[in-house]
Image (cartoon, rainbow, N blue to C red; front, side, top):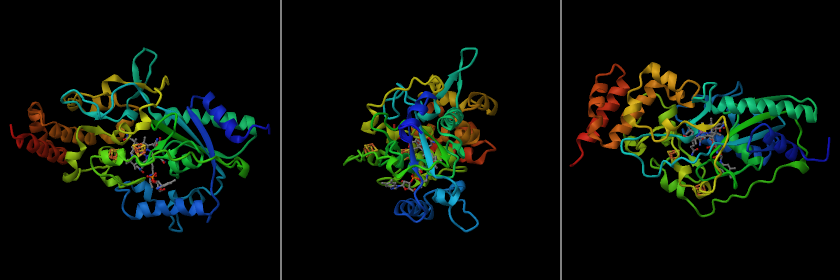
Length: 372
Ligand code: B12
Ligand code: SF4
Ligand code: SF4
């Protein structure tokens, strides 16, 4: 092998295939202090009930260990993890900026689109975009370093990607639990290649210094109190979880805090001072679909199952499902306090979808109870 370290080779090749930055981390030995810390943090998080109804995070192996608590549990053949990040920042407004009346908010990561052959901007899903790049990188690394075992993942791998991003020196873990890179900020998608490559100890990445300091803006700004401490989230309270992952009714006491977010939440990243300097992405596969920036709630409410499927085919938004999005729209309408939404909400109270009907009833109450 040439004199360049694995870190340098990986970073160079990753940039060639379209990533913004990359690094590699050795998987800590079983029982080492690092392994124990990561495992314990994960187990405690799950056992405190912080994962809500995200059952896939709670999966156990035959021995009863949480699969995602450690790669030593999930995939003992893995020696190192290549972590790649892609910037998805765009020049559009923040969710915390003043917005048109009666508009909702869709999280920035779900705005992405790419040009079709006919020139239209069609949805792009970051999972697919990053996976293609990871596979190219995997091939390039095998050409440069010789064959090794590997497996590429975006989101779906049996690991906490942010823990490895931190070990790989790609960024520090902000108090909002997001990975922050000093130059790129936190508007980053993460992708990983699990590999059988042994990382020599003299090539371990240096941890990026924690630059949150005494700041606590993200914790203070979270409207539902989901950041229960620095780097500690109760997902049950997180608007992102409630609007994307949670099925059925949203607990009444959290509805007001949801405000106008109809899919995901960006507040704890919008207020982060490190994101003020974050570069804008010019990635052709992650361009902004303008119609999703401050979308009119009335327009979204007019979608039917078919137009929802067409508009969000290949978009992360389909994860919320049509029913979930309409439930969220009803709550955002209630929080808008606009009487213009009353006809739609009245109609929804008659819906066979009882979750929607109940959310619409709640929203009507919010509007009717307004003191003029
Ligand atoms: C489940 C999940 C969620 C859940 C739970 C979030 C959470 N904080 O865990 C919900 C639905 C709420 C969610 C929301 C979002 N998510 Co999400 N999510 C995931 C997923 C699939 C798994 C994460 C996981 O395992 N969480 C479990 C807990 C245990 O992990 P954790 O919070 O990171 O906790 C660990 C650390 O806090 C650590 N820890 C605690 N204290 C300390 C101290 C130190 C010093 C260290 C090192 C560690 C440490 O120990 C904990 C246990 O291991 C990952 C992809 C993946 N496979 O990793 C994407 C991922 C984390 N999500 C991502 C994104 C983009 C989002 C959203 C921004 C989307 C949006 N706009 O709505 C929000 C951000 C909300 C937030 N503030 O985190 C990105 C994060 C990119 C980044 N820059 O960090 C990821 C990596 C997806 C990807 N491939 O790009 N997400
Ligand atoms: S994504 Fe929103 S609700 Fe979740 S922790 Fe951040 S500010 Fe709070
Ligand atoms: S807002 Fe402040 S505390 Fe939160 S992640 Fe950014 S720098 Fe860290």
